[in-house]
Structures are given as C-alpha cells and as structure tokens.
Length: 257
Image (cartoon, rainbow, N blue to C red; front, side, top):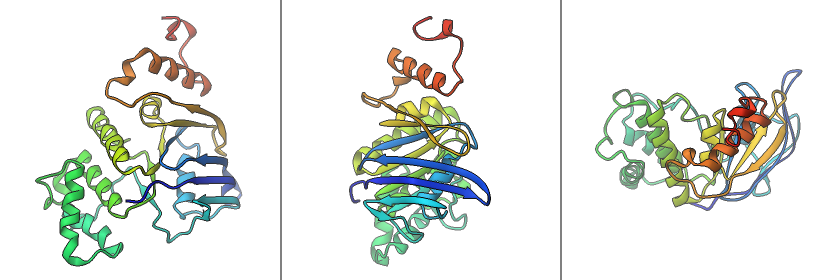
C-alpha cells in the first residue's frame, strides 16, 4: 500500500439546500490520524462524505496531495459504522470483490483476500457469510476489504460505534496495528472522547452545525492498551470535555480529585 496522502480542506463549505452543514479549514499531514470530535449531528460525517466525493462543496476546496477530490477516486476509502458487506458473498469473496475492482487478476484474488483477512485476525473464517459472523468480525472484514483497495486515506465514520465495549477496544487496537503497518492517513469521526484520545495524533474539536473547527488538540505519547487509565490521559480528557462544555464540576477534575 502507498504511504498516506496529505489532505487539505481550504475554505470548505457544505450545505443541504439552504441549511449550512460545515465551514472548515484543516490540514492533515501524510500518515497522520486526525480525529474529528463533536456531538452527534454536528456535521462530522458530512465532512468525510465531501472528502469521499459524495458531496459537492458550495465553496472552497477538498484536496488530496494537491488534487481536488473526485467522486471516482480510489485514493480515499470510506469505512462506515454499518459494515455494508454483500450478504451473499463469503468474507473472502467480499474482499475479492474489492480486489476485482482494483484490477487484480482472478488467479491472485483469493490468495490476497486470505492474506488480508489473516492480517485482521480472521483465519479460519474465510468462507463464512456475513450473517455467520459477529459485529466485530464483520467490521474486520470491512477493514480488510478497505485495505484491499490500497487507499492512501481512510475515512472512518464511527466504525466502532455499534460494538460492545470489549470488541470496540479490540478494534481500536487492531486499527492502530494496521495503521502502523501501512502508514495510511486516517480521518476518524467519533463523539467518544476516550476513543479520540486513544487513536488521534490530533483531535479536532468541532462546534455544532455548521461544523467549524473550535480547537485542535495535539496528543503526544505512544498509543497502548490501558493508556486511558493514566493521569495524563485523564487530564486531557477533562480539558477536552471542558472545551466542549461537557466537563464535570471542578472538584471532580483530575487536579481536584
């Protein structure tokens, strides 16, 4: 897979009819994980859809490596909360379909599909239909299918939001592992502060509609299991909640505890 691409949103304005949805300027470095954080309905997903070429801006530009985003580009790949797998195709054949669209010869598709599924921990489930897999396993298939397109940018729209807590943690760690291997640029949408802090190099705090960048928070330090229980994580969590206007009283802050 190619290294991650640079993403730039310059004076980007999006709207649904006469209703403004987003007004954003943002520069994402190659290979960076940037998390868009804000309340449900604030316009986070709308920004991703514009980058995927699914929405046309009313003003401004969305660029990947200096080129305007187009609806047929394969540079960006979208990962949704719902897995959108083809229910009549096995896990391997779902991934093979993405390989076919990429132009991989038929003789090579099965092998590559199995390699990708193995990377996301699905050995032994190649021939299972989506209906035979758990929610977390289906998301693993979706991740493998996305990797099959060799995107330089992954646009992830709350992909783990419907999973139980344990499975969600497993998928977060899997995503970190895949990102370290491929170096893909990732824009990740969530309304969960802990998830944002665990995954992001930077967290972009968005105001409600129209979505505007309220603040950008740098998140230094390694990503690792259990980081959310460390004092620095708790402090940053409180600061972000305070910025969003959703922090507990001061006596419950990390400093006041």
